[in-house]
Image 1: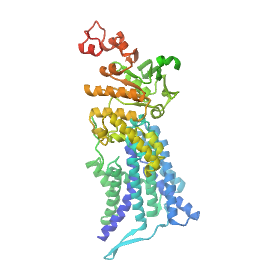
Image 2: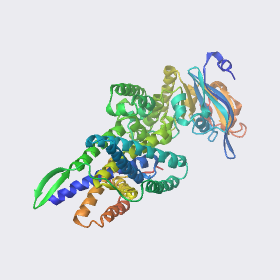
Image 3: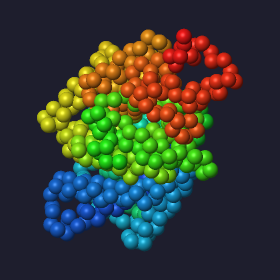
Image 4: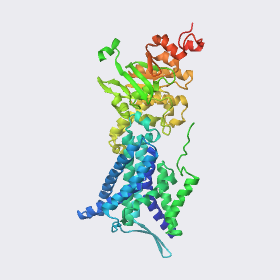
Length: 304
Length: 289
């Protein structure tokens, strides 16, 4: 029981991170119908910006951890969003009118470019970060196994819940969110009603990148080491989460992320750590075979 | 043409189309079209299928860049050249709203939300980069309340107030058509372009549509352009009719002048001597008896 609870906590932490990345995939797919394969790299850049920002703040003499974290959060979201915006501007927007596969290939190219760019600038070796947020609660003790909830895990949950709540409100009831939903359904009609479609799409990328940046920050704090290649695996897993939840559905992405995190944690806990990635991708295959629209996705009905 | 020349009988020109050409490869869809739509008037564009009517609309609303020609919109004493503007700016700055032959509502959003999207620009300004909107600050609340009030007004006008929270895609066909007009009006247009608004409506619905368009013209003081095949709508409410055939203008004038124009009769019915005109067509054109 205690072991189960511990895996649940670990899985939810991991799932929060995947969920935040998955939202970026699902939103971009919703609005322009493409899978942004460079999104994992945006998350990786978020992790690097976090490390750089924390080191700069430390050397500038900011010693209070909450202050440093809040500042880092803002800096990371800002810079990573700028990357998200730029990627859309130079790699996808010029191709929007062309064949559907063109931006997809461009995205793969962008992904390779960003990996190499970070590798060249920051080196190929993993960058370690000493634990900043330490300590936690011991929830229960049974049979020599204690269930531990660290402050960091709590921070990750709470931040994720807050972001997702804010984000859902943004989509549901602000003019920007309404414009995004309108663009999702009919770009041309939205433009005819005076919605600046290009800007709305840009902001979608910015929002996705900002959430990926938070995921990058969480991962950096949680595992304490980042390298230029972390975006690939996390990106593909978050993509799996988006597919599992139903590509294009926001609650689906959140749910899919949590489920993927849980599956990975329980598989590692009860079966084998070595094959944890296999478990996740087996899910991807199964979903694509048996329920391609995902858990919360709507089937596309083409009217004739 | 100067403004003074155009403003005949005290009518104010709204949209001036001069020598408009639209080519698609070898096909000339619109050829040397010049006409003027006036404020407070209903201008109908009619013509057989494939005459280029919708192409003209697509040029006006920025879907197509005209191959040649000039489209001038007169608004608030200034003039705007539509052929040089991006699509969304034509809606935002020039104030041209349009509907399509096929219904293009945001089917997954409610009727009310459809009308709020149409008021995106003022709301977006009030929401200050979405921050005020997210936090529900008073300035944004006021703007939103105003937008909802306007949306209610138009829902009421088209008789859908009690179905404001329905998903637009679940409304009956006639209601969807009316909702599209309400949505177009919520953008606060100076020119309303309707592409076959009466298509698929039954006679009673199409009579209601006539009344709605006459009300809009009388109350909002805007220009309306419409493409329509339903002659009861065209002849019943138009102040001015432009007839196209194979991309060329063959007649331009009042309904009375157009319905007796030999070129128009020829385009619609072929040469008079070849075939007896069916009675129902003759009565539609007002030629019976």
